[in-house]
Each structure stands twice: as C-alpha cells, then as structure tokens.
Figure 1 (cartoon, helix red, strand yellow):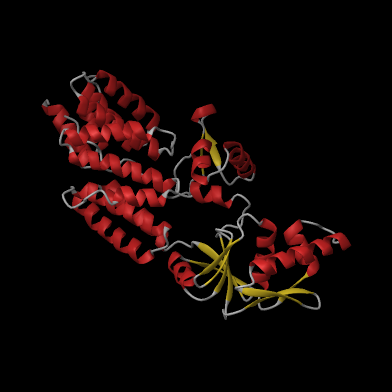
Figure 2 (figure 1 turned 90 degrees about the vertical axis):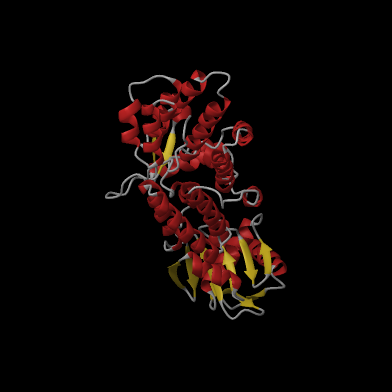
Length: 406
C-alpha cells in the first residue's frame, strides 16, 4: 500500500472524507476507487459512491478476494443507507465469510451488522436477535462497538424495552466519543431522540395527549384496558384479543374506547364503522350484528352494553380505558412513520418493510405527495421518497464506520 492510500484510509477512519479525497481524487487504481467510493458515500452522493465501488470491485485482481469482499460490504451499506432493501443477502454473507476466513474480523462483523440492520428495518426482529447473539463485540474497535450498540438499541426500541434501549444508547455514545468520528456521534444523538420524541397519541376520558415510548411501555405493562390502534388489538394486562382481520369490529372498539366512560350514539358508531352518512334501519340492524360479534370477541375482557342512545364499553377488571394511536392520525400513517427517519426510500423498500404490495404503497405515496406531506426525486427505478426537509437541520452523514482498504 502506498503512502497516499494509507493516508486516505486513515482520513476515512477518522471521518474526514474531504481529506481522503484530496489524496486519491485523481487516481483510478482499484484501492483509490474504493476509497473514493466510501468518501462519496459519507458526503451523501450515494449514486456516485455505488458506481465507484463497483468499478473498484472489477479492478481488483482475482487474488484480491478480501478487497473485493470489502467493496461488496461497502456497497451493501450504501444500499441500506439509501433504503434499497432489495440487495441480495447471500452476496453479503459470502463477502462476510471471505473476510472471516482471511482474518478480517472487524469488517466481517460489520457485514453481519448490516444484515441485522436490514432485518430490523423489515421487522424480522427474532432473526435479527438471533444473528446478533452470534457476535461478540468485546474485541471490536470503538466505531464497530458503536454500530453494535445502535443495533441493540434499535431492537430494544421496537420491542418497547426502553430501559435496555437507553442503556445501549449510552454505551453507543461512549464508544462513538472514543472513536472520535463526528458523524458517528451525531448518529447516536439522532437515535437517542426517539426516546424523547412523542411516539403515540393517547386518548382517555375523552381527552388526547402525546406520550413517549416509556409511557407507552408502562401502559402496556399495566392492567389498563388498552385499544391499540398500532397493532389493531385490544389488551387487558396479559390478555390480548386481536382484531387485525376484523376492521369493522376494531373501529367499533376504538370508538367505544375513546368515549369511555360515556357511551356512543348509534348513528356515530354507524359512521365510524360503515362510513354511512345517513343511517337507516338496515344500518342499525347491521350495527346490532357487529356489536354482538364484538361482544363475543371481548367477552373475557369487557362487555358492550346497550344504552338509551347507543352503546358503552364496560371493562370487567380494568379501571382505566385508553386508546393508543399513531401520533399522526393519517390514513397512510405507517408510510409516514418509515419516511420519518429522514432517509430516502424506494416504493419497493417500503412495500417490503410494510408487508404490503408495491402498488398499494405507490397509491399511498401519490396521495401523500398530493397533500404535500412527502416528496420524491428521480424517475423510474431510481425514484426515492422522503419527507420534506426541516429548515435549520443538516442532512445526516452516512457510513460512519468506513472500511479500511489494503
């Protein structure tokens, strides 16, 4: 390795992409192309970075398997950063095996973390935890240790284990400061904001307020009767009744929960459950049938009692009834929740993460774009979606732990 390549790699390791480019910007040999690709990724030009890394992988000779594997890992990180979740995990796994076989434990672990982060993004938390348990972070350098703790925190947040998440983020912050990489420190600080940002909208006794993750966790662990509009379930302590496949019943349960301890008029229930503007006798007959079904579904948790003007919810054990909903009451709130991470997503990646068809996601994005809630850039397969930027905040730098190159 010549002195310029060494200096550029050291600059990238310290989070200085401009310093790296000063040394290798005019070179087209394979190591320089790889370092330029990583530098461009850190600066946010992901398309250029991807092209440079592919050129570098082709330029490395057949005996430079480790260098090619590092290019594959870097390209996978760019795909993850740009929310292109369609990349083949098998290619990354093969690169990880190559790095591990040649003794490059740090980059092999980095490849595994990328795989775990992808699983977390698409909601496969059990598999993510299984893979994470195979990694020992103890011998890793501070930058890799930070990546490990961020993954641990991400899983804990999605599991609603806020104490574990806070502890992991504190460890990540200490590791990031030891690494001395400003972008990595900023990434940890940005991740920690999740614990202080409103996570849900709580309705109780007819009043609404925003609550954080810790309060949501405490509420779900309590004996309160909770109508969970995130997962479309009704819970009372440890008992859970899923209404995910019964949207009409869940709409009735939510309306009754929001009105508790009062009742809801029959016409209001018909409008919430069936969307009818004018209730007639057929609507009222259907309402009686659906209320009977809801009563049967919730018989172990609560009763649905008829009142003079409508129906009311009567929990059997709980003394409190609350409704938990997304902070933004929007038909496409799930799509907005993914876009809220500040990254640009393709419609195919959103479909994969949401478990929905790509056409359904495209219709949702078109509706949100018409309302000015999201914006897109690019065309065709290169089209990406994001929320409009907030003035006064810079774009998060990507790839905080650059891969060294021989």
